[in-house]
Length: 270
Image (cartoon, rainbow, N blue to C red; front, side):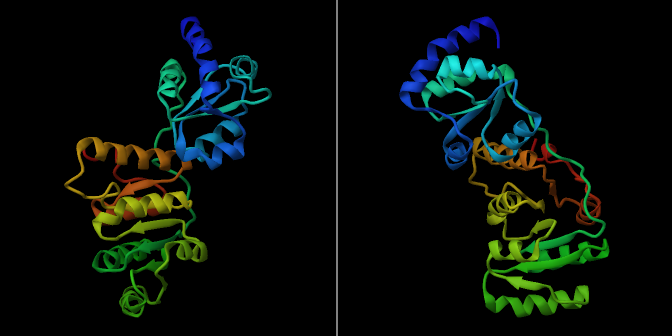
């Protein structure tokens, strides 16, 4: 941080403290993470703590100052992480820290198990086509998700014809991911549920493949679409999870089974 920015921060810090928008304590910050505008971590923080912050918090993270600076400016002694709630004052402080933002790049390649387990979100016509492609790559379909219990037997019968076995069906995604522990979730839900399905799967630690991960809603404005895209790509990057497009299906699934994104998300809709 340059001298001028630091001088301005010294003026704003007391107001931030009095307004109660600056918080510390990891557990408290985790409890309020969805209300935070950004996180400030110090330059003397450990690499492990920095990486944990990147993974745990969905908001922008800035690296600047020292633990002593934090104590002097905000009165927080012995801390290397401060969270700022959304506020006009927070926005002013955030602008002063812009040079210290930590940029997390999307993950385009990683090491997966030799035959990764896949969970299908959706087992309709699209889900069955995807299941066949995964099966041809040597992957095992661990489970599938449907809307209603009455659909489970029908989907199991159809999948058994393709796979030679019948995966377990679920109507609860939480239960599905907890019990089947997949490496990959393939989101084959109706388009309006793609964004929520991808977000859910990544939050629960899975790599995700989907045809339209940001959803396919023509009523979304360009700004809303970009916000969805940034949110999802940022989440995947922070959690170090692959987020791929099911474009050119067979090639996309073959690459994904090998731990590679066939068609980088950053190229989509640009």
